[in-house]
Length: 113
Image 1 (cartoon, rainbow, N blue to C red):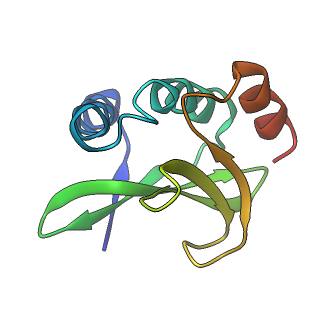
Image 2: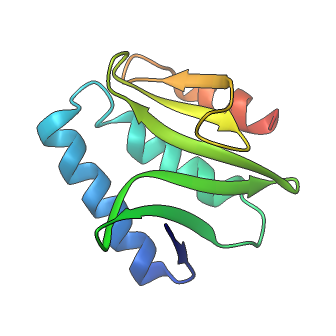
């Protein structure tokens, strides 16, 4: 199930949760996650961000529209990266980011979505 993020308070709660989980369980994306959050806010359409929820709690998967197209962002536990996929969580990986990624890579990826 998904929850729409329609105001800054919900977005802030979601980002805080992601940062806390990344700090404890995903140290290879704890820094880049914040840069990706900023890029999402920068480039997203006016549609709400949708967050995957499990048992009423927001999880580490979201859907965002850019240029009318829906993209999924999720954490890949095996690769320890955050991935962008087109349309769904099962889509092909368009981009993959970790703390070793450069900010310029994020800018380029988001400019091409």
